[in-house]
Amino acid sequence: MRFSDVDAGALLQQLSSSGVGIDFGAARARIQTRLPALAAMIKTVYAGFPVEDPSGMFDLSVAVRRVGGLRSILRPQVELRCDGVREFEPFPLDTPLPLLEWGTNYGLASRLFCYLLLHAGVVERGGRAIVMPAMPGSGKSTLTAALSLRGFRLLSDEFGVVRLQDAALLPMLRPLALKNESIEVIARFAPEAVIGPRFPKTHKGTVAHLAPLTPHVDSRHLPAAPGLVVFPRFVADAGVSLEAVPKGHAFARLAVNSFNYDALGPESFDALGKLVQESSCWQLRYGDLPRAVESLGKLLDTLN
Amino acid sequence: MPGLRVAAFGAEAVVFDPLSWNAHLLNPAAWAVLELLLDSPRSAGQIAAFLERVLRPEEGTSARLHARHLIDELVALGLVRPVGEGALAVL
Image 1: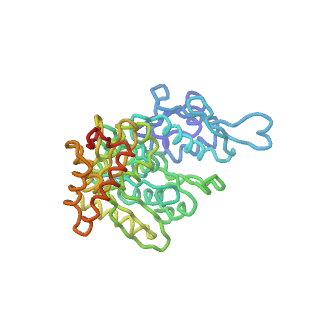
Image 2: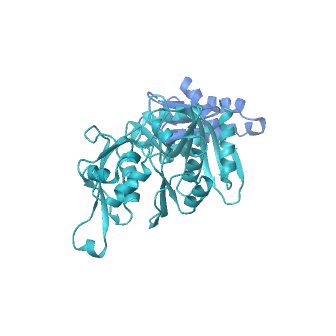
Image 3: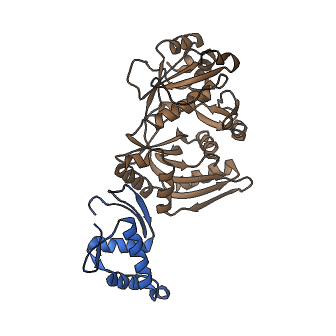
């Protein structure tokens, strides 16, 4: 049964007791919370995901709960515990979903050492992946969201999960965090897209989460072969331009954009080398989202 | 160098040093010299002569200086070491 099919009261009951499991593809997490508002948000942004039995094996257990004590009367907050440990400061009570999503990403990034984890959006079409590594503010999430709503399969927005043995890209499918102007850009780009509540005044500005499409959820165990590595950069009114990036430079930029490249040493070097070897590498400057989507589609088609 | 890993991308390459776990992006000249030394130890003079052959004619006159600079950098990175009698090798 999917989250969209579960009765809201029953979901809260399950989240409050033993929790629910969610399978992202490359990793699985168990989530617990007693917060009714967060349960409703989970139901919206994880709508297409099956509700998993919480008694299985999980890479991460996450609990979100209201902070108690006298201070909570003056300043209500929520905290997140990863595997029972509070690893960072609480968030305001009215931002439980950003805390859950950010904290889960943090927990996964600091625990998964069986893969090379790039900070990158990844989509796929025709079996070939487009890996889009970028620094915050580059327009990566906006572009990844737009591609996922125009016929490309979403593998991930936050993690480019590279399998060490063969450099295949694995899905780590999670709600896609849109920030500030990009929320309305995507809402206009695809009015049918399911976007969760807006959270103003987070440390990243206003944040909202795009629910992955159900067919993408159903394909979350299907890997993709390397195809393109594209370094996106949003530049207002820039149109669209693509410039080839030498592969050695692409390697260096990908390594810098990785969560765990340094920790894995020779294994990550070999996997990253294979990924770059088998990819065509480009710098994309874009100010026109529909044209950028079209250009990347054409570029990917030249490989197939 | 036992365990030296190379990701070659045409004329340039990234190499992984198994001792330091550092990776280095090598430009075409540096990669050509390292490839030469992977084959067998060479003297600084032989490296300069090699660069003179592979560099463009207008750069050839400064090959010796260029070779010295490259050798110094490769040695500083720990990728190349003197092995006696003026020879250098990838260890």
